[in-house]
Image 1 (cartoon, one colour):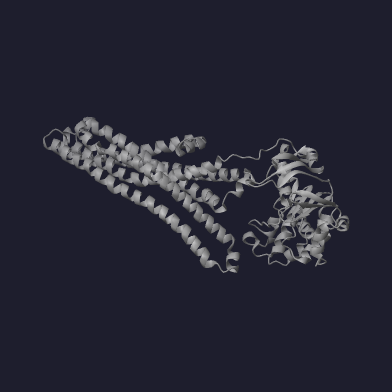
Image 2: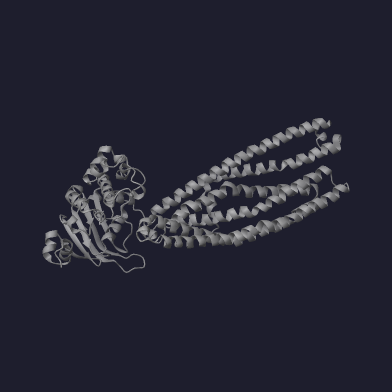
Length: 586
C-alpha cells in the first residue's frame, strides 16, 4: 500500500492547481522574508564604504540617495512579503477547509453505501471519531503544516546558495548540522508514526465509550451504574492519555536535541566569518548578512519537531479516513428501474441465508407475499421474521436462492428504486433533528400541511400532536426524548403513510405502543394497507388477526400458513401463541 501522503495527493488531485498556487505563494513569501538581512548588509555597506558601496554602483553615488533607495526597497520587500503571506494564508486555509469538507462528505456518503453486515462490526463512536477528529486533524496540517515545510525547504535552498556564493568555507560550516537535523527528523518520523496510530485508535475507543454511554443514559440511571460507567470511561481516557504520553515524550525530546546540533553551525558562522572579516577577506556587510541568514536557516529547523509532529498526526488520521473510503461496497446496485414490478407478488425462492460466522437461519426458504394483500409474519424470536425484511430491502443478500418482486430478482433493481417502493416502519423508532412536521414528511419534504395532517390522522397521531406546545412545529428533542415510545411510533407510522410507497412493511411496529394505540392501529390497518402490498411482522397477534394471510415461522421455516381463524382451528403453533396472549392457556 502506498504512503498516506501519496494516497492523499491522489485523492485530492482536483485541487492540484490550488496546491501549486498556494505553494508558490509560500515560497515567494519566504524569499521576501529572507531579504531583510540582505538589506541590513547593504545598509552597513553604505555606512562603511559610502561612494564605493554596492548601491553606488547602481548609479547613486550620494550616501543619502543610497539610503533613500534602501528605504524604497525595504518598503517594497515588506509589502511583497505581506501580500504573499496573506495569499498563502487564504489559499492554504481555504484548501484545508475544502479538503476537510469533501473528505467528510465522501466518507459519510461511502458509509451510507456499505452493507449492514459491515455496520455490525463497527462502533458508532469510532466512526464519529473518523468523520470528525481524523478529518479535523488533516485540516490542521493543511492549515499550517504544509506551509511550514515548504518555507523550511525554501530557506535551506536559498540560504545555502547565498552562502556558497559569498564564502564556500563558511557555507560548509554553517550547513554542516543540516544533514544531522534532516536525518534526525526522519528518524523521529519513523519512531513517532506508530505511536500516533495508537493515539488515534485510543481516541476512537474513547469516543465509542462516550457515544454508547450518552445513548444509554436512561439505562445507566435505571440500574444505578453511574460509578461503573465513570470507571469504564476513566479506563478508556487513561489509555488515550498514556498513548499520548508516549508520543509526547518522544516529540518533546526532538527540539532540545536539534537545538544543540544547530548551535554548532551558528557558532561556526560567527567564528569563521568573523575571522575572515577581521583579516579583510570578507566585507563587513557580507559578514552581517551571513550571520543573520545563519539564524534564519538554522533556528527554523527547531520547529521541524512540531511540524513533523503535526504531519504524523495528520498522516495517521489520513490513513484511517482513506481506509474507510476504500472499504469495498458489497451490495452492488442493480440497473433495472422498478416501474410496475413493485406492484407484483413478492416471492422468496429457495433462499439460503446466514449472518456472518453463524449457522444458516434460512435454508431453501420459500414464501409468496401476494400483491395488494396483507401478509403477517409471526413466530418466536430468532425464527427469521426481521431477516425477511432485510433481504427484501437488500440490507443483506442471500447466499443462495433469490427474492423477486413482480418476477424480477431484487438484485437487478436499482437500489434507490427498490427502497423507495417500500414504506418501512421498524420496531426501533428513529426521529431526526427538526420538527414533528419535518419527521412525518421525512420521505416527502415537499408534502403540504394538509397531507402531513392527513397522514397523522391515519396513524392516530393527530390528536396528541395538536396538544403539543407548538403543534406540528414542536421539536421532539434528541431522538424524540420529549415524546413517549408510543407517540414516537405513531409518528414513524405517519411517515410511512405519507410516503405512499406501494409496499408497506411494519416490523414490530406495535412493540412500543400502548393498548389504545394498538387498537387504533388495528382499526386503521385496513386503511393503511388499502391498495398496497403489506408485510406485517408482529408479536402481538391481535394486531394482525384480520390479515389476508398469516405465516408462522419456526426455526427459519414456514411452519403454518392461513387466516387467523384457520390457524386457530388448526391447533398448532399459532393456536398456542394465541392462547398464551389471550390468557386462555394455563
